[in-house]
Every structure is written in structure tokens, then in C-alpha cells.
Length: 219
Image 1 (tube, rainbow, N blue to C red):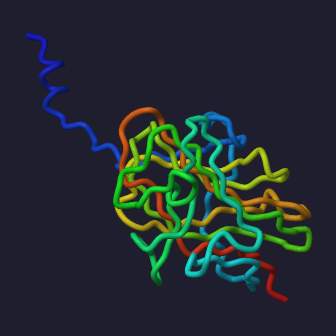
Image 2 (image 1 turned 90 degrees about the horizontal axis):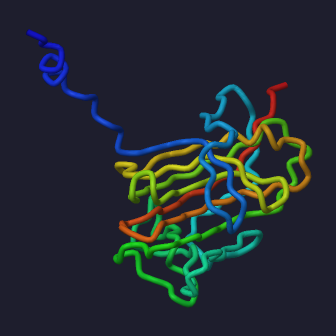
Image 3 (image 1 turned 90 degrees about the vertical axis):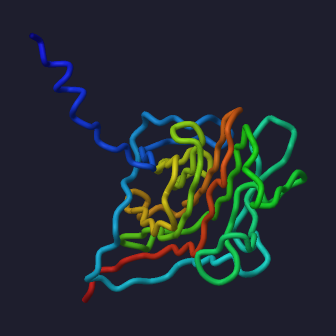
């Protein structure tokens, strides 16, 4: 008898990770392209001196300084990132993608459909820095492979290369994003995007404790 199918069925499939992660390139106001190359995420090197170029903990009125937020969606209901005290990583506040705008929501509600919510920082001058990188904490719960949290960098403030995730992060994640590809550039933007489709909501993405560092070789 052919026992192949029975034998295969008896072997349990490996559990799929709760979070889906992939490289992505994004143009502000245009859907995510998940087939484009991106700068990799990487933990920072330890044996280097560091300089902090920017930090944001969302504990004060936001946006401020070089931060901006906007909704590039076409629904007519304006939702964009703003600070809120619903789920901080540290302190009392973090950023959530639908807490700002004319149709702002409270994070106790699911995020809305058809979101294209951006926050960005820049331009920042990296022309004198050797190995810049971005560190931040995020918590995400979104429809897997359909509603995306993206972070990345841009040399023109419009086209961003980075990483997108969807699904369940299973708590707060400390992320490092390598900006070496933009080292030496005089105008660089850092961007965060939350994008949803027309169905199924969730808690969405929370961002906290954003830091822009540069590593310099030790003398």
C-alpha cells in the first residue's frame, strides 16, 4: 500500500512565526512594494564611540523640531501619528498611527481601514558621520501580510528603503536599523508608516524611545 500521504500527514508542520518581516521600498502616498531591496536591520557594533544625534520619547507635545506627521490616504478621514498614553514602552507616552488628525481615534479602538499614516524626521545631516544607525522600540499587532508597519530612510524625503512587519510582535521589540547606506549624505529623512487595507483591524503599531546614533572608530 502507498503509505506516503499518511506518513506526511503524521508529521506536524512547523509553526509559522507570529510576525512577518520583509524588506520594502516605499514612496510617500504609494502602496508598499515588498519586492524591493532594502538596508538591513542590524545590531550596533559595541567597540565604537557613539554620538547621539536625536532622541524622541514622545513625553512632550509632539510633533516638534524636525518631526512631522501626515495622512496620505484617500478616504477623506484624516488619521496620523501622535503621542498617547495608552501603551508606552517607557515613561508615559508612545506614538500611535491614528491618534492625530481630524478623525483621530483613541488606541483603545482598533485602527481604521485604508490607513496610510506617516511620521518622519529630517532632514538630518549625516555627511560627517561614519556609521549612523536608528534605534527604537515598537509593539505591533496587525493583520498578517495585509496591514504593515514600515520603517526606513530616504535621501530625498519621498522614496524610502527599509523594513516592514505585520502580524503580532508578541510584545515590545528593540529594533536597530543600519543607516550606513546614507552615511556621508547631507540630507537624510527617517520615516515610519502604518498602512492598512479595507478589512480587519487590530491594535496597530506603537513606537517609543527613538534614537539616532552615529558610531565612530575608536582612536
